[in-house]
Image (cartoon, rainbow over all chains, first blue to last red; front, side, top):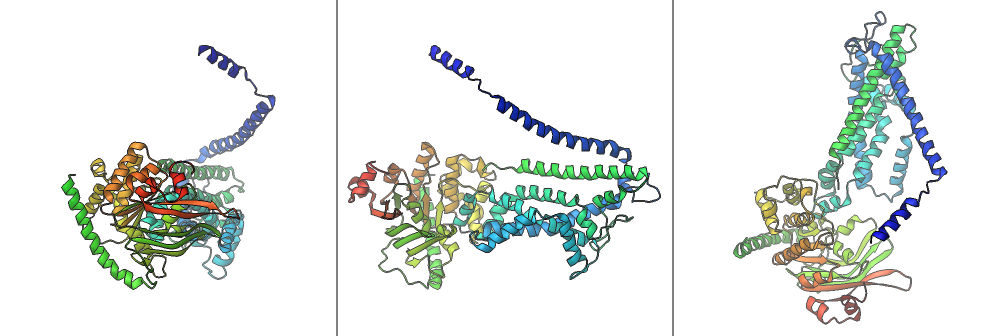
Length: 297
Length: 299
């Protein structure tokens, strides 16, 4: 027995077949990764270094000011961002989840119209955000709805923007619920609706929540569509309702950067740092949710 | 639980069932626009010229059989012979498969369950199902059992009592009575399957369909489920699909043997070859194919 083991071991050890090709390839892959990480680190380092200069309580307690740049803040923009995030969620999540439930649980995937809808949703996810801004400008701010350049208009633009992403991630979450759960529920005499509402949706909540948060974090980082639908760049009051004028962090940054005084530029860096922190917190929440409620089927 | 207690429970359940049956007589008469299947014997479910298609593919054809009340009927046969397909027709679970179509009649107490005005929910409440892989819901043990009565809107005065009786009926009560609020996923595979049986009997069905209920279980858990089946057969009509011929021989009173033979176009369509008492099928089969299968020469 020992003899055979020895022979086998030796034959295993002698097989050093790692060629030059695979080593080069592995190095190339590492290099790509290193470049990406280096860029990311560089950007973060610059922002943290320059942003810390004005990262003080004034940043969130003071409104913007043209006269006192060294003590002014972006309070109105931070509140605008929070307002618009909540409003966008209220509009996009019910619509997106409902659409995903229809497509996953009810629609007959063999029908051509359902396949057409699916294809279009995939395509919509790739449409540039500025297009959604133009759409909202034409139909919501002016045109048929004409509600003006208010918070609600901005939220509608962002909701349209993230809807395709919300639908796609919700469908994935629903699809990951095993079909045994559905047939088990239906076999007990539950209706399709009861099965969806009591079994499938609760089981899909972690995935839906994670996807929704990531979609919302994309929405609050957007400046382009909001500039089109009239988010102001300079505002010294917090929004007080859905028909209020508003400004948000990205448009605030957009307006601060070109100003020629160095205090404004420092304030812009601090605002960027603030926005990044908000985004990181949201992404961390999404990851935490995913890990906390991950289910082993 | 002692023998006499068991008897009390089952008589209680029986009385309840006759109540629901008389209630349901009304519903059935109301919804019965389909004429009763002619010559239906006293079986609970009778299949007449049953044929099942998946789109253009004819999966099963020409199935005529009848399932006796409070009996265990086993459906056996090689893989792909359509026995599961037939089973899934009996409570309309084939409706969920896109493109599935059923011809012929599936008569439940003489009413074609594929008839136009038939309430599928009511059909599934009265003809329960246990699946191959234990599929408890990601909820507490209690909620798993209470789910059926809740969703079907059964008028239940005391849900705790319903849950306890169902769990006792599935021989699971003693193992879980102290952890009813715990997640069902914490149970072992065999316990999960018995929970699924408890869940099925909680809606007080008349028939329980079992689709290879032991194929994912170890021998000890399988033996428990088999004992349970025999016990349940005093109250319920059980129809079981199984790959395990010993299991069919051990538990069933009647056995249907299916097989699929390719036609000249190479399409394999399942057929019922022989349907008789289990004793006859395993002791003295009439058909040479049955004999070949049960003696292990094919399949």
